[in-house]
Image 1 (cartoon, rainbow, N blue to C red):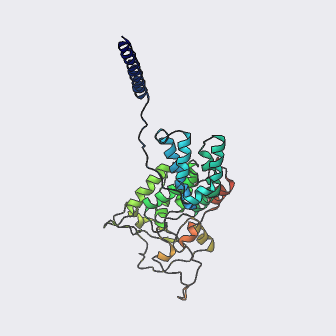
Image 2 (cartoon, rainbow, N blue to C red):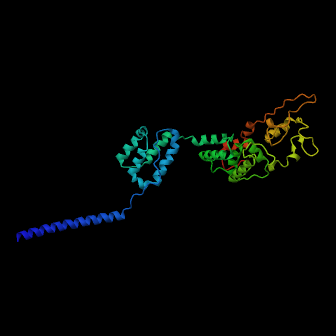
Length: 329
């Protein structure tokens, strides 16, 4: 009888243990069903910051994007703090060790303390002003129009100028264009006042300047619609028309006054003949000669560099820093 009782008690004990194990497994299963699995990261890990200042401007947005998009995949505040810390080179980690010690002491794991420290050390406080200076000095040079537009847009955003008035953006952009494109713009009667529309017009004019073989040489071709009326216009002080002698018959420019020459220079014309199609170094006419046949040296300095500098209106709106006022293009 005693043996039966002992066996019964052991059976009861085993049954209770089994019930407890079943309950534990049921609770674990319920927890797994209600707990969302950690998502997989969407963005790649950024490159470690090595302390090179020129790389900080690209590393900082990359690490911020990673923490913003993949915060659930990284983990809680502690995991995010150490994620930033471990994405630094060893000598940069040594710089932010005080932030790590303070976080462990106060149990306040804000990764922004690391980023703020790095910004104070590596961020350039003058980068916007330097970008503005670079923007005003930007020139197309030998670049294609699309390449120049890409450079201009990038530097414009670096200078925080994307919200500047359209008239100011157009003025700066136009000033950096090549002489050929600026001359073509000068021949247009109506130009858009909106920056995107102006860019579109420049692209169209640049397409016209392509030679028949597909290479742009910056010169007018016989098939260019902008050259169809050149035979009947007045170029400077020389009347070129049906009753006028041809340029091959009159190779020397006429005498013009210094005042007229300054007016041509201010309007971006050739100071020898007044044409808007070329500079003086490309003028088909020779210098003016006196009655004795001796060439007269005139101040025909009409280089592209003089026309490419800023006019007084450009300098005025750069200095005033009041983008509420507009500058006429």
